[in-house]
Each structure stands twice: as structure tokens, then as C-alpha cells.
Image (cartoon, rainbow, N blue to C red; front, side, top):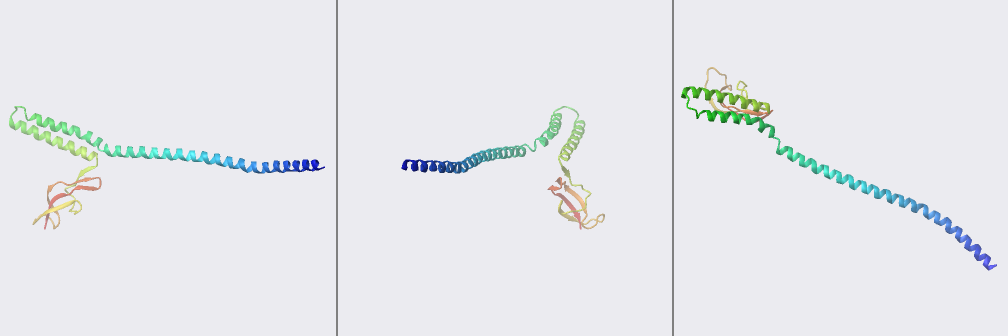
Length: 179
């Protein structure tokens, strides 16, 4: 009988162990699944973070290149002006009549000046209009004179042109204003 009891106890223990193993096995499977998902998400995060860093570095490089070469178009547009000035200089070497040479040189310099102003204007640089009323933001009054033809504070003469880049003043116009 005692063997029979031992066998029954052993079979009951076996049943309890089987039920316990199932109870333990289920959370272990969930834990393994969660750990696998965690590892997958960590891997995905690491890849996304690396991609983000690469994009950030590439954009930073592109930004510096854009800043470094921002004036390239402007410089290319100035090359014809340099060519015109070179031709004017080489024209002085000819043995033509001095008056004819001077007249041609003057004409060439005037055309070159128009060409230069055109290039500047194309890139947003404009001369301050001399007919504008006095404005201390764009004019620098270097002298005051009495003038019967002008009202007080009105521009009488311009010593040096002023220039703007879009809406910013690059250089104030140096002007004489009436008392």
C-alpha cells in the first residue's frame, strides 16, 4: 500500500508540476516576446538616430557650401565688366589721335559703368535716388549751405552716391543740404 500511496503522490506531484510548468511557461513566452520586441525597437531606434545624425551632418555641410559659394553668380556676372575695363586699358595703347582716343575711352567707361550698375541692380544693389528727400537713414549730411533755390533740409548736392542692398543701406549718400 505504501508503494501505491507513493505512486499516487508521485502522480499528483507530476500533475502539479505539469500545471506549474504551463503556468510558468506562459509568462516566460510573454517575457521572451517582450524582450524580442524591445531588442527590435532598440535596433530600430539606433538606426533612425544614426540616419538623423547623417542627415544633420549632410545638411550642415550643404549649408556651409551654400554660404561659401553664395557669391558665385554675382562674381560670374562681374566678369564681363572686368573684360570691358581690360579692353579700355588696352585701347589706350593704340597710337590714335589723343582727342579721338579720349572720346572713345570716355564712351567705353560710360558703357562699362552702365554694365556694372546693371549687374549690381540684377543682384539687388541699387543706388540711392538723388531726387529722394533727405532721410538720415540713407543720407549723410556732410555740409550745410545757404541756398535761395532750396528749402531748409532739402538736398542741394550729392558728393558721393549711396547704395542699398534690397532694403538695407550699404553706404549712405554723402550730401549737402540747405540751411
